[in-house]
Length: 160
Image (cartoon, rainbow, N blue to C red; front, side, top):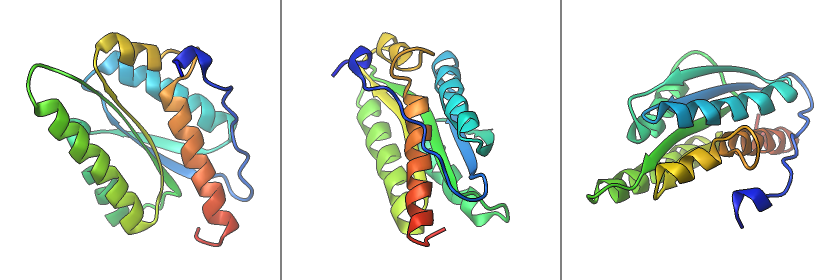
């Protein structure tokens, strides 16, 4: 399915207090990550969520940063990881993508957090740009909607 064929995004309505979200960004490809962030913020504002953003050095640091935030004294209902890794000429791409995605899943499962992943792993910068546009299937918006759905699920089952 291409990004043009994606179904319309449905923004979940969350019962109770507005959810508190931390958006963790790896802005190596700044224009792409800014586009992902704009999509995520649009969804969070529509859902009346409270959010803040924090930047890290790169995709590899995304799971580490979320884990560090969990150790802090501020409470978040959910997290959104945004970044972009574009395939290059070395195996660095495979290592970073594998470890960053595995790290995100590990922190989500270990600590039972609601996590929306908007970490793009693409072959070309053009593919990333297409997934970060304001129109179409913005993967930042999709990550925000996924995070909100997980928060809604956790609240329904008493996990938050």
